[in-house]
Image (cartoon, rainbow, N blue to C red):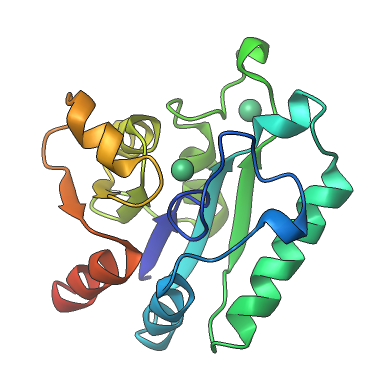
Amino acid sequence: MKLVILDRDGVINYDSKQFIKSPAEWRPIPGSLEAIARLNQAGYKVVLATNQSGVGRGLFDMDTLNAIHDKMCRALQSCGGRIDAIFYCPHSVDAHCACRKPKPGMYERIADCFNVDLSGVPAVGDTLRDLLAAAAVGAQPLLVLTGLGAQTVEAGGLPDGTLVFPDLAAATEHILLSS
Ligand SMILES: [Mg+2]
Ligand SMILES: [Zn+2]
């Protein structure tokens, strides 16, 4: 099975230090929805793994998170794209859960749910947390420079083998060429 794992904020949509707390605040990065559609067309399942600690902090509730994801899925649909599953961690940092990236809990659940080995599976993110969680399960970390990506490169310490791309469209180009 062909699978790609994506972070959400800073990869698919613009991020905000104030969190994405409403559907109105969710705005796609140019080319990201089309990139997901291209992956779908090439036979990839596209799965999200997203930290959403705003829920645990009480900044927005689950209904709102679902409404944000409805908006995302409708926008994708109008581009011919589809996300096959959304895994999210709603916990705050101090909950010390097993799912908040850099812990690999969400990726492990993806492996279980889809019954796949994540070795070499492309996992795209804009923060070190995304890359560390990917590396922990043997996935291929891809860093994009959108969102917090430029800061992430500057801070260094990327897992061995991390590939860096300007944005999801460019990362997708690489995934499609190397598959
Ligand atoms: Mg992100
Ligand atoms: Zn969690």
